[in-house]
Image 1 (spheres, helix red, strand yellow):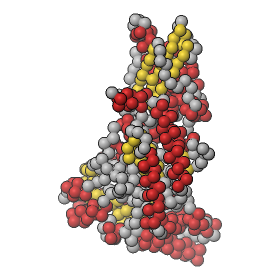
Image 2 (cartoon, rainbow over the protein chains, first blue to last red):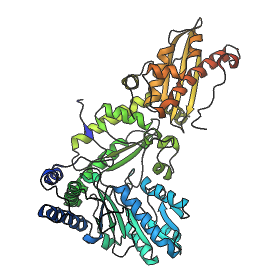
Image 3 (cartoon, each protein chain N blue to C red):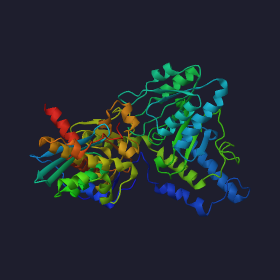
Image 4 (cartoon, rainbow over the protein chains, first blue to last red):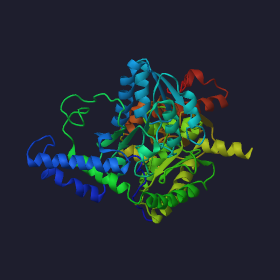
Length: 395
Length: 140
């Protein structure tokens, strides 16, 4: 078997695509003007900035005036929640509803607000990794400021019923924000049609560069200033705009929303081959709902092996993947997402996330399905935990 | 987080992996909940560790420290094995990331646990010789 290089960690970040890079290039050395300057070089920069805003808005069904450019998904998440909470505090709102398996950009923001007197309800996600809209409905109170539920989960890829949740929020008059960092460019989004009030996007998950993102804020939602200074981003976020990144991001949004369904179908076929192939190994389980998931994300628990070892061995075979083990999370506990599904610690330690995209080929999948069982068997052969599992099973 | 070349070498080609059927001492430390279990098998002849094997469930550092620890005690007198510290294992591996130091502690404890078992089988109280084997401080 010839060693290949396969990048199967697109949920972590993606490669900047060639058209995106080409779109950016003029804005480094030719169109380097400051968008706030009066002369032609500045005016053309301003024009490029506003064209980019239109493109981003159009690709999610928003108005250009509803798009703020930010530096990343985490910034968008932080800003959205903190803005709404700060602006609604004087109106007696002091409650947030979120889910237990959000990204830390949401969870840590909520925890910070808890220290400032907010109460937070963390909704369960059940065994299939999906929030129930009726749980949202039951949790909404008179003093609820915002509901923030992710569009698709970053670790297991489950897609949440955002339209139903948005409808519940609308009925109760509560603002609904969704962290759509993993969903944008993979599922068709139309914020107005879906009733979404706020939505976070990240550029580097969709083949733009790192360090650029956006926050969609429906007209009329109260916002606070994130950075004081110049008049950029409608006075809300001062600082000279990162034009090359923004132009590249807009290009990436445009491309990601072209043929979105067809690309998704093609990727999902490969994803399903990966799922079926890896599940042939004994004592494995797919994490998250089988159907309601992103076209490229697979998360499987493999009992008796530890995630970091698995990743290191896959890396030695040229495969880049990710895991929810404690050793890879940098903490002592395995992934909060996997624990939220009800997985035992020892099972969560042995999880493998593969996130493929439209560039992944049949041959790549063949290779992954050849390597994974070999690596798993090798690790299980030296695992006292696997030995114990086998003994228990034969008893 | 960066692993040294030696850690990666001992992870990808671990020395002394396996079991010893007629082991004179077997020790197991760690737990599945924390994500690390090490099991050590010792064969002891005339006070010399003539053979040692291990099985480990854990991260790259856990496998590498187990492997290095077995290398450091193989063919050595019991007294030397009793003196093996986690620090010596870490040094022999050209260092470990700070968050992985507990893996080296586990390797030291696995050897001590196997030696305790050896003494117990001989009808000798291991406590005065091997000392207390503390639980992994990370898990408790």
